[in-house]
Image (cartoon, rainbow, N blue to C red; front, side):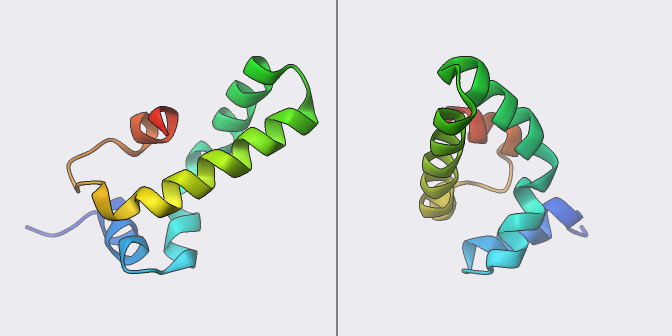
Length: 77
C-alpha cells in the first residue's frame, strides 16, 4: 500500500526533517492559533501558547503512530 503525503511527511518529520514537520502542521496552524487566542485572550499569549505547543509536538513526534490523527494530536499537546 502506498503512503499518503501526510504519512510521508510524518515519517520524515519523525526522522528529524524540519521541513516535513512544517508541511505536516501547516494546514492546522491558523485553526490552532485561533484556539490559543480564544483560550489566552491576547495575541501575545496566544503566540506563546503556540510556540510551547509546537515545541511539545516536535519533541513528541517519535511517539506518534502513523494511524493517529494529526489534528487531534496537536490539540492534545
